[in-house]
Image (cartoon, rainbow, N blue to C red; front, side):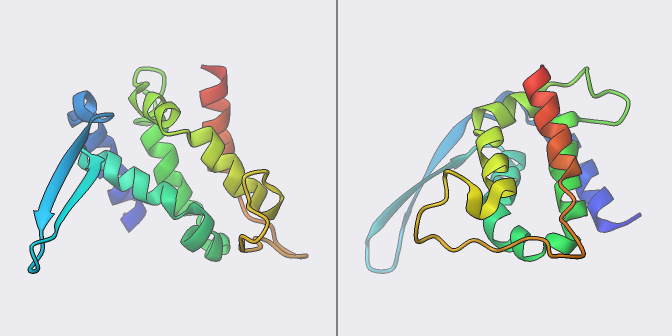
Length: 149
């Protein structure tokens, strides 16, 4: 068993346990030593926070490691699909992805510098080379599932 299998298992279990709060947010207020109050709004669900952090890393850290990102993308796939063999029973992950504009984020990631969302001066990491291309199969599976449901 590798680490990605453990993370997939935990994410799937958390998704089911936190299904009722997956799309809810909470406001956290803290005061620093100088008395300044800081308010942060974040997902109430731990699983949602983890997935949102993963999605935020797509165009930076994930793109830098494009030759080794298969297991990372499999975790996103596992969250969206649910348990193997029960993919059609649990649509919680797909609904969450629709709420957080997953299709837009993933297409932006796959297109890289050619994305219409890429700002003119924005630097994007080039994925792939003349001998090797990134494996977007898990993301394509998710896009297909979202668009056909």
